[in-house]
Picture 1: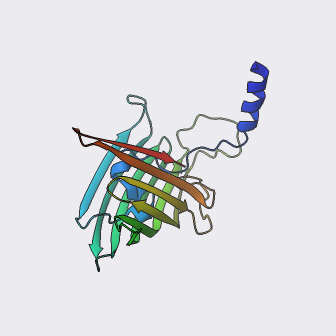
Picture 2: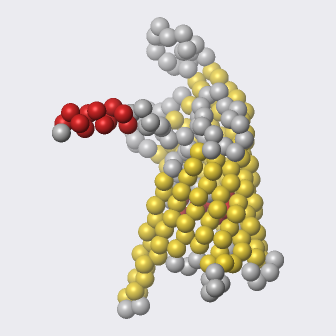
Picture 3: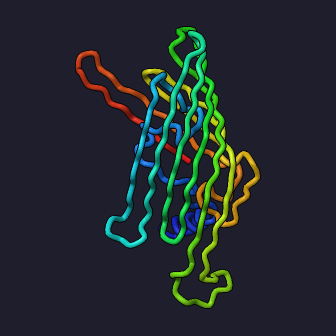
Length: 218
């Protein structure tokens, strides 16, 4: 059995990939970071700011700061659209990314009961990325020049989102345009990167308690 597990793990190592997107915290409160279709869910102007630090007290540990603004607007009883903008700073040791994103979404009521909304979204982003190798230890590796590299990259994403007061489920596709990054940061080097999210609100009419569950996969 032990040998079987070792062989299986060896095969899995060939397909395991590192996370190419910035790891946002509180994503249920910032759903438009995971799919552009989740922008403008309400008619209020929403502002969100997050600050996440990993591995506290460790030098050059990963950290992500984000800021977003969005608003939805009805143009009929069954249709509305949303506009939003996100700014993200992602620092992970020698690699740094600072980028912005503009988002548009279109929402319309679906189903016989007309209580659920289906949304389609599209976004475009631009990022400044850098890799600072000046602090690397001297090693005999031709790929490490101990210099500082910078680039400006851009891409687009799209998504679909189904939601009502009880549940939400969404999917997104990143890197709709050919990848133009050489550093392999941020959105990664793979085209058509996929993301999925969902959740359900459990309620009980006998108790004044609501439990919100959610998942995120990519």
